[in-house]
Amino acid sequence: MSVTRIPKQLTIMSAKATTGVGTPQLVNDFKNIQLSLTSQTSANFTAKIQGSFAAPESAPNFAAAASATNPWFFVNSWDLSDITTNVTGATGYAATGTDIVKGILVNTDALVWLNVSITAISAGSVNATAVIYNNE
Image 1: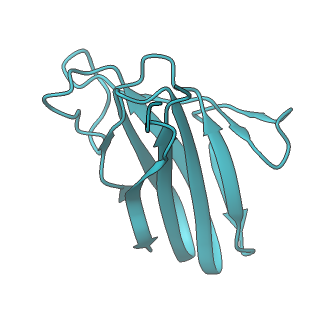
Image 2: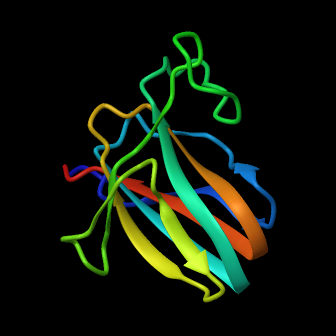
């Protein structure tokens, strides 16, 4: 029996109160990725999931513009509180003065790197943790 069903938690950001990106996480060895996105202190922000197929030896610079030499993109996902809600990567998840606790299913087909970008934050702070596992 394989032990890969035991989820691994990777912190992308913790109490981030400024715009910018979190810590890129290497996720290529895992089939399933879910993201826990939470906020505190009446947060007002937008969070967008970032991904890349770049080689595992070196993460792209998620803070810089995407390009042929810095390949990354916004990732499509689903809000687990309403699985029929498909969230476009470029749109992301927003909080407008009310804190959120979101479980998010990330589209992981061949994803190598995962990150989260915070834009337009004007209050509060954000936490993002990836939960990764295989179904073997």
